[in-house]
Image (tube, rainbow, N blue to C red; front, side):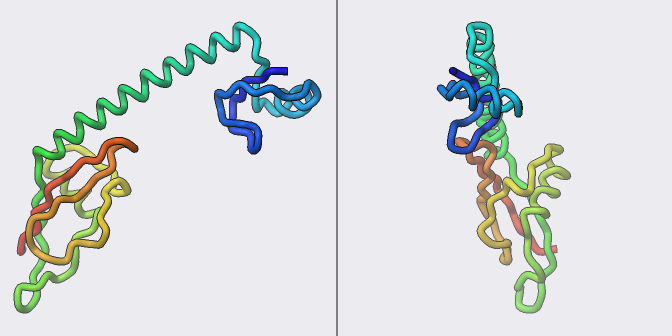
Length: 148
């Protein structure tokens, strides 16, 4: 029996795949637990339409991420931190502080988990901070750290 999986099934396939399984396995496990539906003409047509919708949505999200990456490249964020003796920084700048400063200065939100800092910034200067906006799109934000 051919079955369209509605959820990922370990050792069988991923959501949206059409798989061939025995009739008993399909009736007693896949269909009973609502892990899949029978692969008839109506359900196959629905699957094609759903895949087309998903591809269109993925393309829209990719375009939006690329547009946001261009906006990030044009903008910069200024952060001020205290200076200790000899011009050394007193503390550091983390991704949380960068996200908060971007929201305050540019009026848009960036998820702090998407900001990819290897280590916290502990010196004064200008830094290019990578931000993962989409699995295929990386944006760069210019962060200027100044003495308060």
